[in-house]
Image (cartoon, rainbow, N blue to C red; front, side, top):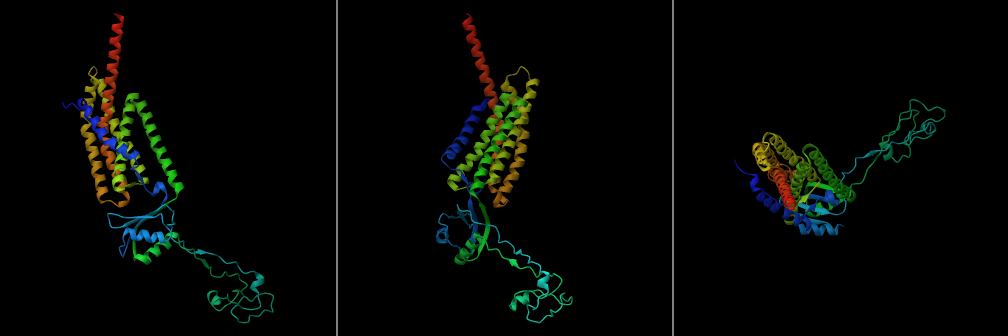
Length: 377
C-alpha cells in the first residue's frame, strides 16, 4: 500500500513553494484591478489607419483626456483606459412631448393659421371645419393650428437628446484614425468600485466563516480548522498567481474574479468533506490503528473519485479558456487554477494537517506523561 501520509513534509514544502512567491507579489502590488474596482472607463478598439499606441495617447491628451493610457493588446486591438467616467450610454431615443389641446375659445378663432378665412359669426364652431395641418402649417409660417370644435391634438413634436461624451470622443478619434471596430467598452464610477471591493471582502469572509462553523459542527474543531487552512491555501494560490501575472503581463482581475474565488472555495471544501467523511468512517472500522494509517486508507479509497471529478471539470474549463470569449477568460483561468489547487489541497494538505496535528498532540501528551512519572519517582 502506497504511503501518502508519510511524505507529508514534501507536500508542505511544495505548498510553500507555490504560495510564498504569490504572497510576495501580492505585497509588492502585483494585483491589477480592472475598472470594475478602480472606477473609470476602458474600451478596446481598432482603427482603420492602425495608429500606434503613442499616437492615440497624444490625440487623447489633445482632446482633454491627459490621464488616459493606451496599450496594444495581443489581438491587435488598442486598450484605452481613463480614470474619468466617460458616458457610455447610447444616445436616447426621441422623447415625445405632447402639445396642449386647444381650448374652446381658441377653437372658435376668427382666422385660420393657413391664411384662409373661416366664418366666425356663429358662437359655435362649424362641425364641418377640418383640423388644420400641423407639419405644413409650420412650414407656411403659421402661429397656431386650430379651428375645429373637436379638440384634435397636433402631431407630437420630439425632443432630441444630445449624444454622450463617449460618442463625441469616438467621433473625434474616428476623424483622426479612420473607421473603428469597437470590441468592448465599460465605465464604472469610483463609488461603485469601492463598494464592490468592500462587498467582495465581506462575501469571501462570510463564506469562509459559515463553512468553518459547519465543519466544526459536522466533524469537530480540528477537522474544521484543517479544512479552512487548506481553503486559504487555495485562495492564496489563485490570488498569488494573478498577482504574478499582473506584475509581469499586466493581467487585470474583474468582478467575475470574485465569483470564481467563491466557486473555488466551495469546490475545495466539497472535496475535503469527502475525504474527512471517509476518515470518520474508517476510525470506527479500523479502531486501534494509528491515526496516520487510517487517514492513508481514507485517501487511497477516495483518490480515484477526487481525481476523476476534477479532471472532468478541468477539461471543461480548459476548453472554455482556450475557445471561449475573451470576456470570461479571467473567470475561467481563476477557476482552472482553483480547481487544480483545491484537489491538491484536499488530498495533500487538509488531511496531512490533521495527521500532523494528532501526532503532535499525542507526542505532547506522551511527554507530559513521562514528566509526570519522572516527578512521581
